[in-house]
Length: 333
Image (tube, rainbow, N blue to C red; front, side, top):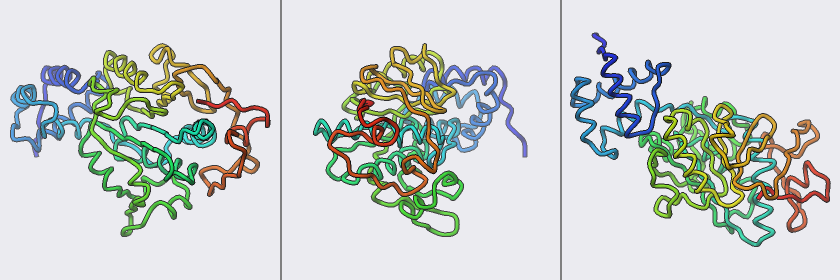
């Protein structure tokens, strides 16, 4: 079988077109990824020559099946449930409990979060499981878990809610038993209760259609955008971050990967250091200094064991109950 050759000139043209239309960056150290993606897209395209293919792509709208095919070939879909323990711990033990406590104290039972760049859905479903555990009365809440991605094929897979065992490699056994149903030897299906908590929609962070009511991307309490910005061009990064900031509610949180952390890029958001993680907050009001993780044998129950939330007075926070003195009630939001 002859391997199609894609010249440096054609790759340069492809980089420019893809950056302009998708906002994706393919520097020299990712040239092999670009070439592999182009070859894969060309194999299934009615136009098989690279020069003609790029000329044809330039005439098509972003929503066309051909652009969708190319996106599926170019984007990185690596993900799994409860990825990055440091991030999960901060969410489970500090950020989400404080948000929930603040909402209960205010009598405002609404929570909105957005997984921006959700791939095949492991991240938003993980958030849904955390919230399901932390909100035993979740049916009384106005709860939004929005999950978006540029890759339509990934979104279709996410909506099916079917995963192999490797995707659950960091998922505790009790969560598997509670929120997944085995379908065959190596297939697990998300429980319908969790699946129905998440809304999937296509969205390209390089575009200016957020925040907006039409895309349901405004007034977010929490935005998780991990391992996404690093694949965008620098100009698109800056524009996307500015829009993400606008999409946050007052005192809202933006979560990125450690490799994407940058005080300069995310200014004026306030960087907040957690053990093994850095998050960004829209306001420094009610700023809290996170406590170090406690010994697993003495700290409050973690996601690695079924959580039993003790009864507490109205307005008392989960963080206060587990890591602070009784008089410390400084909500994250």
